[in-house]
Amino acid sequence: MTPQGFGISPDLKAMLAKWQTHERKTFNIFRMVSDTYHRENFHSDILKVLLDGHPDSLYLFIALLNNVKESLNIDPALYRGARIEREPGRIDILINSEQNNRGIIVENKINNAPDMHEQLSRYYNTSTHRWKLTIDAIVYLSLDGAKDPSPHAYQMANWKEVEAKVIKCAAFNNRENDLISAWLEPLYQREDIDDDFRLTILQYIDIVKELGEDCMNKDTQMLFVNWIAKDKGNFEQCKQIAELFCQRHLFALRIMAERYNSPECKNSLHIESAEVGRHRGAMLTIRVRHNGHEIRVEISDCGNTLRLLPYADPNDPLAKTKYQPFCNATGTSVFGQRSVSSEGTVAAFYGWPAEERELLEAADKLIELSYAPAQSTHQQGT
Image (tube, rainbow, N blue to C red; front, side):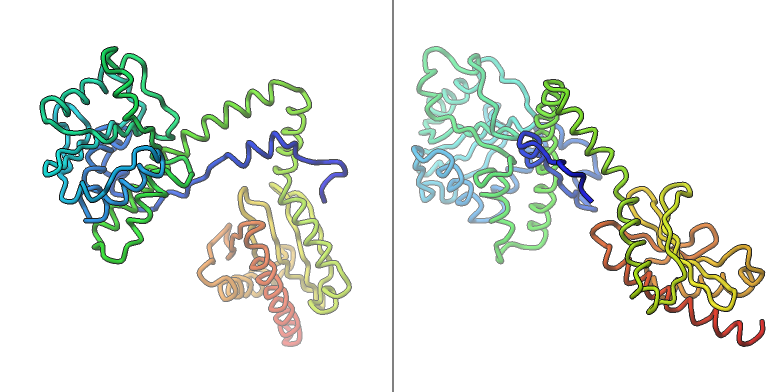
């Protein structure tokens, strides 16, 4: 039960709400091959492929830019048939519509590379003067969208002109206008893309989410550390939560013991007792006894899981020859694919609280089956 008066402060709730957890894909070819996804060129290469990989990809990308900065009002029709170029004039990506003399510059800062001297102004001048393009936007792409171009990325002569074209864009910040939500996920969901391209999108989304959530969590960690340091009461609150969490399985087992000690369970399942003790961690021992023989069903704390197993009393002379083999066979039958060998017995592991229902159903079944052999074995005089 929750201690009287225990509560989480609004500040702590807000920080917990910001904490991100991304479940990484089991198989991701980008992660398997190398750590190049921590480098800028990797992302620029993949982004070019994704922009080039489907006729509507560029359309969705431009729609994202217009949503982020409505004043741009870029007409996607002007970019029909545009070329996606890598590193022309040192530009990371240039979306070049030669037919209409229009262009979009993409400056990739996903891995937080520093700005080079007068970088954005040089790219703009090269595009407008040498290639005679009208630049509709300079996409300044960072991981979370918070990074600003540094002052030395501009030339004084055209600072305001270039700055007006800059649009800050997030690869992933868990908002509706980041690259994942507004471009890649809608692209992935299209029915007319081939499986290889779809898989590439999915695996790149996985990588970017991992990087983005690491970035967001670092900010949350700093907020959390400062919050703890600010007030002793904040520290004590966190300490209390941590202590309660460490004992979560003990509390759960005590509640289960109450269930199995209830008159209803004792009568229907022929339970002699259900007790919580400590044996290398918290353990609930449910005893089934009939005609002098005892079989136990044990639920014990195993770190992040609860272990369930049927176990014969080692002091019973029939335990090794009769009951423990039966317990192992029974456990295998009840647990199915969950069955594992644990210290000479068959056991299964359950997450709590997510799998509490499955755990209790399996425990009840073991108890029901444990009662039957104790009775039949005794009647046979073995």
